[in-house]
Length: 401
Ligand code: GCO
Ligand code: MG
Image (cartoon, rainbow, N blue to C red):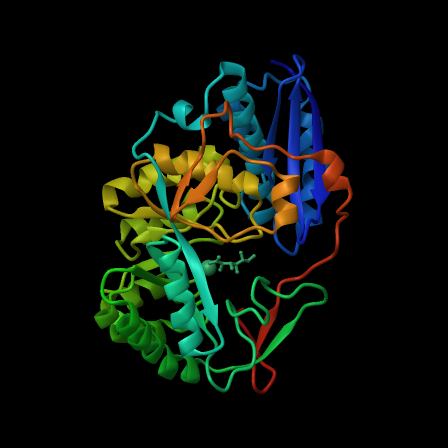
């Protein structure tokens, strides 16, 4: 199955997505997601300028060989741009293999470990009462797991709390969130979870994303105070750059810790897993080099009782959600999947077989990944430059968003 054509499609049905479409000489094609939010064109250029020419004429069946060739052959290994580009190719090749063999990717990965994968949805509000309402709404829709984010009194804008319902982070010029205060956040967050737990009782699974804002000592303090509310996880408590920070957090709390949506390689996970410093890895098929590499991360984590809870924000396209669905029912140590709803336009540009019902994700039975890109519709949504917000302390010091 010689690869005959590799194309990169950039479209913006509400937000930007980079898609790789690979076609083999017999006309079979596959699609992969290579979106890197805020730096999309860097990956698009990496793919079209540097990767596509290398793939023409290769046998598209050789998923692992091509992965190794792109990873090792670049010499400048790892990094978000390289690994998102490799991921796009990898997903497209799994899609092709499934179509060629007439079977879904979950079947190629070894078959099912579960019938459907539990997802967590988002509840966000500018007030505690509003957050409680949002959690109750999610529970009434059948979700069993809800991530709760709430605006901290005294801070005007912050991660995870959109200004208008249904919007994600603001786009356009970098949007500056002024006045971050870890102190105000630390005082408020236990009160938030006390209120939510009191309203919904002990059973619903509650999650929270600290989005890299805290120091290890602060995160240890927070995790300890949240223990009585039994979170499913506390995510990105501290920056990942200094991984020993997680060792410090771990010594101070038994609240389960999740990390890794920004990871792009097994080497980012290795120390955290081996030391027992984290409970869940958030690496995704998109930013961690495709289904092929994510499998290795999961396999490495399994004997350490570390489970996967993959990143699934709306800036990962429905193609990555398809990969997550196939991966998530085929791999034993997948615990949960993040599910952020895509815009209607996004869902029409990327028709897909996967679905979420009553809080559970299924990949469907279509051969391959069961997802496509409607190129004609995609062309109607041209690229629109967008940036992630940045965060600042009150005095203008740059902070972590
Ligand atoms: C999450 C994430 C996202 C990221 C976003 C960046 O847990 O879903 O933190 O909201 O901020 O994907 O592009
Ligand atoms: Mg996160």
